Length: 336
Image (cartoon, rainbow, N blue to C red):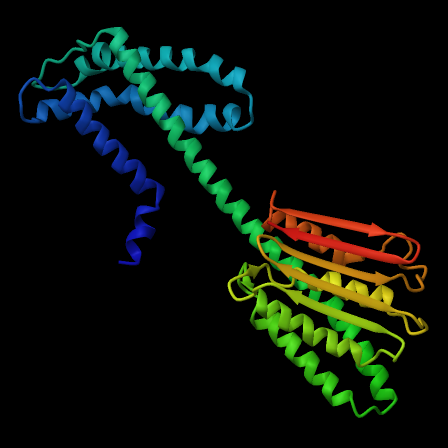
């Protein structure tokens, strides 16, 4: 059964089925008797000579060269010429070519030219619509695939950035022979496990994201002094809420990266999550010392990443506010 869709997807099968049905339909339309006889089949075959010409000139020449390149004037200007050429082939087939055949049948075209042109137009419109619908479907599939690839790319941008910062913390602890080094490695292992294996879905339970953020905050606290202040509050019911994975993480990471500098004595990060009719996520942190690489690039990859993912996953249903003062940096994300 698996091979049937593959076979039906082949062009020659599709085209063959179309022409078989067409020959039967035209033959039945012009048939005098109630049953479809060989003479009807033969007449229908001859009738299809100009139809085949019309359809494939449209599919292979006019659509790709004019319509798909948005040269609409040239396309519609070519239609009367194609109809005229098809009509000429029809007359040539019945008045010149058929009499040259050694046949027991006497056959003429008894179709009025108005009806003939109308049939030509039907086939022209039908094949154009089929072609355009297939092109549109392929375009949608390509866009969907590109969107999936872009979202996966945005997720992978987070991992190296986060891993780089965390390894620096572990390196510092290892140099100081801290007893907390093993605990830090375990926290990092749990976070990486979540990032690698539990974020494949477009949306994940919000409770999972909160758990991941709590683990990350605990990991960051290990390298902070007693003067630093970190608060994370959650309001509302998380059970049924879902969110794009790792959407909040870059905002929190940036707060620690840019606010909690080693020499800062009054560093703070305040995080608030409110869940109700909307999901509201707020991050506020002090502005620590900004080095030359960070000047003019506060937020860096993380903030750009969040903005792009919001455009892709929450188009028209999100609001991202970013405020910066001399002492603080504030981000508020609202998901409707």
